[in-house]
Length: 307
Image 1: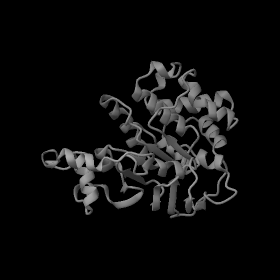
Image 2: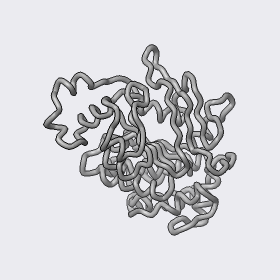
Image 3: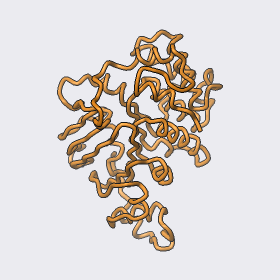
């Protein structure tokens, strides 16, 4: 098991607890992290109220509410085009919402005058595509933003990057370029890069979907251990076993609406809504689903569209 407790401890306080983070690395993290009000005890890390988002006439999110407590893992599942990715992009302020409100640690981040760049530094996001700079070595992919945005000296940023690469099991890849890494290794670098900015919340957008099956596990292990160390996470995924084992709360979205939500085991094993049941059957997660499933049913519910 990877030990993320030293890295995540920074997000909870300014002291390094556990092993792995040097004093210089912690101080460099503090310099990267933007100043922000300290949330009161019990304040949700992320809360959304009736958020709505459309692309032209296509309503992608329709009155979506959610609450994620500090240290919790919310797993979001649903068919393609259901609005899952757009939900994460709205929370990270990569997409403006049409109506509703989003709160981060008690502060409304969709209000006028919010410093978007500072919010994004505190809400990390990892996408399906790795988005690494191909012309930069791994160490430089991690330190670039810290040096240019956070104005952290190269040496300090390098120490922080080395600590994070060690935590994701890639301390021996610092001088390699992305094309020299496997897909799973590149995605772990992308996770370490997102952690470099000392986020309080991590968003994962189907980060294993582009990987070969044999490489999925190494990324899920990093995410699992990060969650166990106390990082608040919102994870869009099709990995149902991960949802069951790691998630605190599971939300099923279809056509921009929350169809069903609850404890992962309850929703996955005993869905109450017919639409949830059909989705899980098509995902071959329920017993004997393949025998009961018909091609016509699959075709009638396969929905594309922009997320």
